[in-house]
Length: 112
Image (cartoon, rainbow, N blue to C red):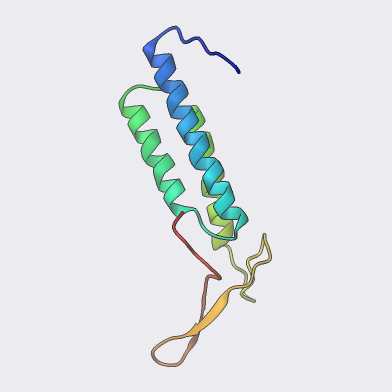
């Protein structure tokens, strides 16, 4: 078991915020692995970064996790014209609009 020594309350708080950011990003990676968009994780990390910034804490770690989650979420939004999810190869579904036209919808999108 590791022990950590913090020299100030601010150091401890920053470590806690970084740990929460890591846990959110870990959950997002599980959601991405299932082929879904982790938009709630992105929103949570963005909000966590704003809170840290407002309280004058270091936000570098939080924003690094946010960039990773945002990039992975954007990969799910990049569909090519054949309806395939380009980077990962998942298929999109199709649906009919009210006037009978076909349009593409994501294979599966959940809020994680």
